Image (cartoon, rainbow, N blue to C red; front, side):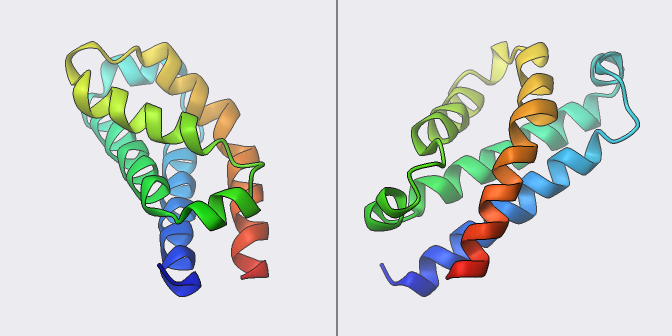
Length: 113
């Protein structure tokens, strides 16, 4: 895999983390219970982030070890395979608290590449 391909994957991760985070702007956790389309959108966005992370080369993952690659891919697997038991509290907390630092790290990385 080339550095260019990794950068494309990282840009996919960045784009979709931004979309997920901005999708909850001005919303409360209870909105997620009441808006099934929001739940589906957020789930899909995080699935894409995890799939893109899974496709990043091992060399890039090692170079940017501050990214929790394994956790991101595991979340994707959990969302895909455990589609019938998604914990919306965990989903909300990931988007609200874990995505902002991930977005900052990804912005720094794609700028470096």
